[in-house]
Length: 567
Image (tube, rainbow, N blue to C red):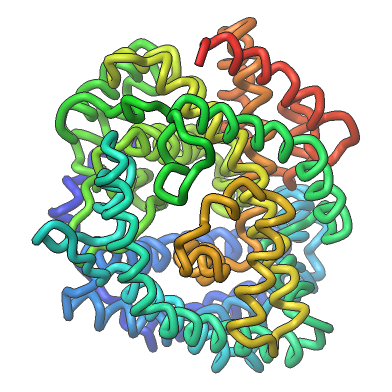
């Protein structure tokens, strides 16, 4: 780290003066436009980058605080103001983007900053302009409404009240009766908010469709790919990749489910069995949250000097927000603060093996940000989304040799982790194909959307649909309503599957040659976002999931690994 920072709770809470921010962006844009020569233009670009980092720092702080406590009126007010004003900031930044790509000094700036930066700005101009500010504000508000609705969930079970993540430990309980009763309570609660979630999504789809049409696109799908910075692959290539998952991975995932039923001594799985792999229960991590953090300290100390330093830094500066609490937003994420040059990890521990998954996953994101922090151009700090997920998913596998620090039976965890990672791929492409259909059919009813989801589950994950019998919420195709990415980040899900395939490459190599695998991983992280996804893979010496044969070559060795665990 270049400098010492305060502990997170001591960071000052600042809400930007929105008008001053807008005025400053205009001033900096004018300075760039009126630059007298190429060096002055470069200086003006750097000034804008520094200012945007400062603003992004404050906005990120507001977002984190609100996600930690969605019921806090001060944070909610600041978050609401951010929802309204961030599109205005975006509009001002578009003026700068336009000036940059049209600059007479562009050849000089491309040499200094790289051509890929200009590709990013070209995409940003295609994704937004002042005509859709109203729609962007509405989109932000609806996503916040969804997050607050999920975060405020109150499930009554055994005389106590729990939020949705906290129910996980009951729904994976070793006692099948407990799982069944917990499942009933969980889905009964979701039935009470089903209509509200469907309404929020309907409004989101329509406002996004309106946004796309205003910008001249045939549907939101075209705009969504641009907003997700899909620089080097198309919906058609994604569709072919989905079919490859169906053809090659769905049968393997189906066999994993068959073996699961055998171990559980049941003829067929029920919805409350799906998340339990062993008759005596899934491996449960040892100890409290503090114990898990201490175990992670030991793990990252042994793994490498870099991980040792950075994990201690995060702990010492109170940058881990791990436990599920009332009013806390669901899910898990990492976010980076460019001024402080550090990241935070947000999650909702619930006493299951997922606690270890999320800790290693989000640390992988954080570690990448740390390794790339010295890249001079802020836009190159973070890779595109699918590349980001390689960093996190691969870290999960690099952590596997140290699972004896977290579990009494680490072999069970390693089997569970690998089996779930493989079985995730068909689910991930279900989410993706569903979203493509939704935005091609923006006027579909809630019932039609649910029916389409059910149809896609039958295609990609038929063993799940069979298990849904007796649970009307899931059988009617409502599973997608609690997948936050579908609401908040349209088309951000195929990214996880692409990254998973690449992470499996690291896993396969790590079992043969740890030193070589770790060196390749560090190289990938340090490259940050200097290149688009497929070029980044080539630079790091990794196989492209879109290329014919990659999926088969990557998945085939995993079958032997699964069998070697003896379960």
